Image 1 (tube, rainbow, N blue to C red):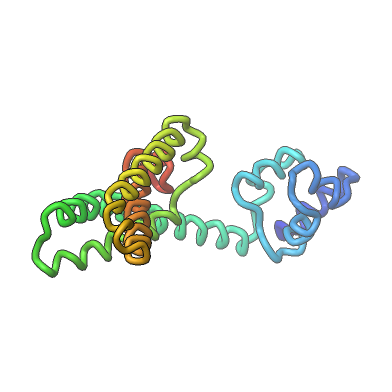
Image 2 (cartoon, rainbow, N blue to C red; image 1 turned 60 degrees about the vertical axis):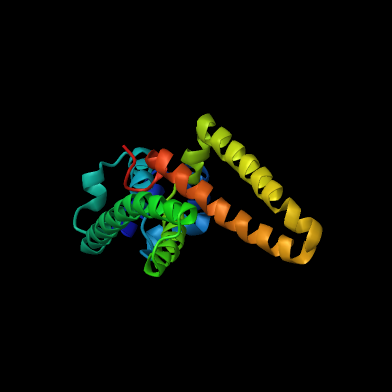
Length: 203
């Protein structure tokens, strides 16, 4: 018996409709239907909830369904790969941020400029691994983000004020570019401080 057959039989045995199960699990009825027909599988957390709802052990749900076991094995492989990439991206961010800042303060040989582009792209990649809900749940992260954003905005406007008076169009473009770069500095720095929110770095 497949996983879908098992949960459908268990649901009917408890005299529940797909809509009632969906309401209990806080998912859509189509999701429950998709599980029962084998078009998709629940994640591990939802699998535990199904086990509790139908009073079936995880072993009973998973046994004798090679397709489902293969699904979770593939998910585990992808999770490990994602964890490895996030670790590499996180530590690469630290190194590249340091090099980029040094290069801004004291320009290095031309080849080093390419590392700034790599840093920029790496920050974008790192954004995909951040648990933003967990990140902004911490009060200190919210405060740091707001303070950094305000300070950098004021600093950029102040530094561009003389140019703005002489050439507004040029200064506006320069200010926009500076704000964009500064935004990535803030994000990159906060990612270093909040490594617990990066996928793969969570404890």
